[in-house]
Every structure is written in C-alpha cells, then in structure tokens.
Image 1 (spheres, protein in one colour):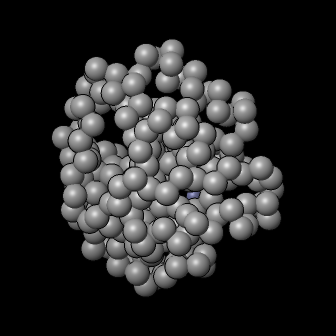
Image 2: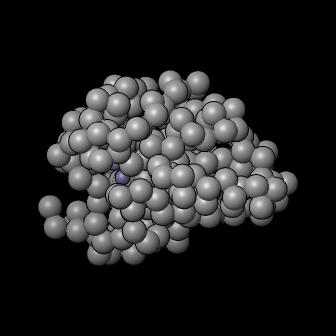
Length: 214
Ligand SMILES: [Zn+2]
Ligand SMILES: [Zn+2]
C-alpha cells in the first residue's frame, strides 16, 4: 500500500509530496518548506506517522521546489536525487532567492545521485521509473509508479494547463513535445500529481489541456 500525501508550501503554493509504503519507508519529493511553521508541518507529519525518510527527490531545481532541500537533508541525513541538466539551476538559486523574498535561503546540498531517463528507483516497496521530461526546465523528470497508477509530475502538466517556459532553460516546443509524446503515452486513468494546484488524470488532460491549442 503506497500513500501519497501533499503539503502545499511557500509563496508559490508548491505541492511537496511525501510518498510512503506500508512499512513506513518514505521519500520527500520537492520539499518546498521554507518557514519554521512549514518545516514543523512536514516533520510533524513524518514523525507522527512514524515514517523513516529515505531520500529527497527533486523533479527539477526551481526555487519553489528546492527551498527545503537543506532543511530536510540535514534533519534526516538522507541523499538528494536530481537530473544533471538541472544542476546549474540548483546552484543558481542562492543568487536570486532574496529577489523572491526568501531571505535566509539555506543552500541546497549537491545531489548525491544524478537521475537518468529510464532508471528505476526503489526505496522499500516504493518503486519509481524516472522519465526525463524537459521543456519547463532542462533537467525536469517525473516519477512514475505504474503499479499504483500515479505520476509525480512536478511542473510539466497542471490541471488544464502546463508549466511556464520563459525561465532560463525553458523551451516551449520541447515542453509541447514532452507532453504530447511522453506524458500522453501514459495510461489514461493514471493520476497526475501536479507541482501546483489540484491533481488530474492523463485522460482528462488529453481531452482538455491548453497545450492542445498550440
Ligand atoms: Zn518549476
Ligand atoms: Zn513550481
């Protein structure tokens, strides 16, 4: 039994996911906690459930998805996973964090493991296939659990919409190709957990996503 718990953090209303198995192993995907209040919400959730954190996974390295990397990695002493094409983005966050009002941003550790397209990640009974999904960010990946039929999709698809492509490394045609050729090849009844806003399904987005207008 795999459980996904979503916590919405920071000024960007970013969705941090805690994915756990029946033995209490868990991974934290895109920890966006920044305030002490948000840090406490995350750790109290993990500790009251008796979870054992195993890893931090980043879908990509935009500031709203990595604000809590330092806190979570030092709190639980767990490794960070990120695709290599987002390393430059990760390293640049400290240069601009203050411009977004995140004074006191603590620099993320470097990834312990570099993610690659097609690789399988296993933490207890949590099992993800990694798919490289560039366009919103060059090193964006999604984490697919095909047994439990969900994908942690970061900022590729949103319900009815899609991630912006005007940030450094973003490219609209690449994102469009990612969505049409990669995301839309996933099962139609697969649940899509989004980096912002509500979840959706692949089938619903194949019918009505705004990308279909381009
Ligand atoms: Zn993003
Ligand atoms: Zn985001």
